[in-house]
Length: 473
Image (cartoon, rainbow, N blue to C red; front, side, top):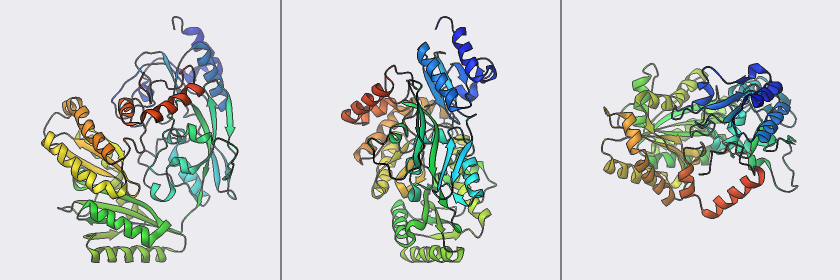
């Protein structure tokens, strides 16, 4: 764009001059959360309503300018960061943060895309309801971003990914039209379910501006236990016992390797991490109950007693109050931060069948140890739904930045070949963004890729919606 000023003036007329940012430090929008890529935006535009979003999209379409929708900018795969060309508009939805309606009888809440996840959780809890999506970035990530990436988190084992929590969407299409699908119906069998096209599409098909989401009655009690187990096989056995005995009461089941926990002890010594020693893994599990805390505690203690007798649990503690429960969950949530303190690392967000996780980890660990002596494995994640954050830290004392630069591709090749061998997925909950485009092209079937490209072409024929994400040029 040779003369960008008339276009910028059009944007200012739509959203107000203070909400079209072109100068100063724009790193909050141009730098991805992992600080891997620093793009350059033509402008950061902050609309306050769906109608403003629609008019911005129309202006961009008329000018041939591409858009990068962005929520809290907490993504892990560089999917909401502009490229370095200085020609893309970052569409920040954080001003659209209202909770529009809460329907207690229908157990639904309608919320705008820029609403911070934690704010929604707290608003629902205040009215006696639970919104169960929970992840480490909940204090800054937004509902629109959660939907665009189909976020997972720690309670998928009971409530499913964000997709399962969404009943309806409001979307601005690539042409600037508004589709209002905020019905809140649980049954609507009238053709294609369009919401599922936009959920998980990473802003490549349109802009999610609002959503109608499921709420649940607030449980009377939620109890947390922290257990050490001798192996991943034992962790899988414990999961099976928990599913048999707790049924739908099992809301979270996380696994953490000892090296991952050692990083928390090292970088956050104020945290009391149980069971330091040679135990291979630890598990944090959560049970919720609608009867009483005494009933839930009895179920959990019976489970752990049987697991101790069977030998799949070596030791365990049960939180006595909310403060202790939060402290135990905080250990799990601190692992990514402790990794960052330790230095740059090679991250993987993979999924395989729960039954295959022990063999996957054993084989892949051995291959990486042989090819890269001294590499440190940071294994942790959502065992309950088969999602591991299988990360590789540089050898102790080495140059972490050089390790990431020189070894990321060969390590990725090992990990993703193993994922394919076990018929898993190279991205369980983080998405593809720009970071995994090449891997998607290698590991997704040609038929699936062809269908995805056809949908993209049909809904965004001019390729203006987040054009760098998902697909290679």
